[in-house]
Length: 245
Image (cartoon, rainbow, N blue to C red; front, side):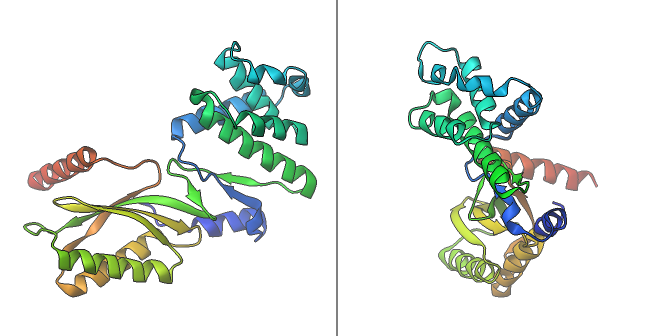
């Protein structure tokens, strides 16, 4: 994991104005986000974008094919008129299930374009597979027990207390923790100006003051939540690499 201060880089680009960025809060798969923004980029240069307002009611027709609805949503999102935003908003009240994420992205882009038009300043959209909340990005963390050890109630309590203490100091918000045989997983919301590696290592170090039971290497990602099989496969690969050294 690269130890980058994302927020500082954003502030450099935006002239120290934190209101200029928006985080996609929903958990939308990365490949779907890429597909949406590739489509948005492709149609941005169309000279007849506003003509989509004439056929906007096709969105609410059950006979309209999904590819056409995708195109309509993407075009509406690029028009800086309240009518376009309200149309997407109305569609989201009863969307086609397969277009739910697409419509959410369209609404977010539409809102940003309207705000940019009104405020006369550009916005930057920050996205990840796990989404975020209140200008914080969501991360999925995996921390490993040292060999030969198991989780007991005392160790679980230490982990909860020490991670909560470090997270609170850094304005992070722990969400869900799960314990497995050799590791635990945690989802956490982290402000953009926080150095991930430092926060997580500090929390692990504090836990290890009570018996040195956690490894100081960990997995962290904001792309997706890993399942137990994926994590165990990682452990197996790591074990093989270590044995071959």
